[in-house]
Image (cartoon, rainbow, N blue to C red):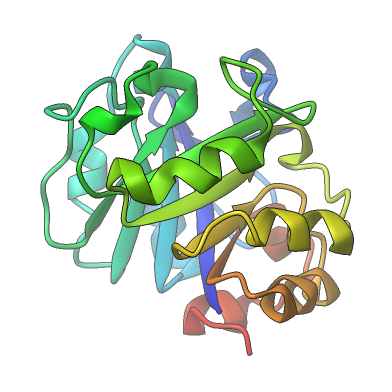
Length: 223
């Protein structure tokens, strides 16, 4: 199973997110990186793969495209959610995997071709339409996506842990590659996800608290 380091970018900094309350996000000035400047952060943490949420672009108030494209010499793969609003609104680079989030992509998800569909979930329902996550996941392959992310926004940054029955139910909704993000607390949670058949886990807080050893994120796999 892949291990992917999550970075939320806001105002030119890596910020620490919690439960989707973006107005409260502040630069990540604690943990294993001495800096919240994105390139310096990557050089300190040394992850193999990263997931970036460009919060400014998602909100329509800015962009970190130049910063993201400059990380190609530091990571092997970058999943990037930059508030994609249509099939022509993609970032093109060999190491980039575009992520199309339900929060911003609009109602016509069939208009996209390729990329990862992020099923953005808050309080158990998909943003913004309120569907059950399984309903959206079950249609992702027909829409032409190459993989999916189940993003538990309510749990981001909270280390609340995961529920085995829930993650197994979500995993069974699609045959596409599926990544899980939000609330992963420790290696026991990673083991639960791997056993349930997930292809990757997106983590951040657990790295900085030491509950997941940095060597694992640098290797980029958990097995």
